[in-house]
Figure (tube, rainbow, N blue to C red):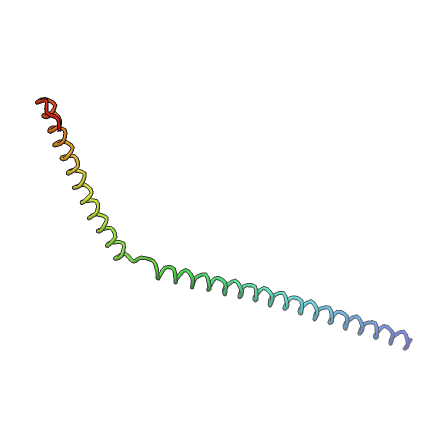
Length: 110
């Protein structure tokens, strides 16, 4: 019975060692998976940081509110001048029409 008992104990020890090895392997796989995921997240954060840096550079080069105000005021000046030129052109056309009508009425040719 000692031989059988020794075989049972040896099988039990072998089973425990196998279970322990399986548990260690599964923990190692889980740890490796967690490390891989952490690395992926770290890579994504780094890429996002680079994108934010590029966006900040572009924003810093964009026109400010004051710059846009200056452009708006300049456009208002141009619009005012344009309206003045349109009015003057209408006046010139009216004068030319009156002169032409007078010349036709009096029979004179230019």
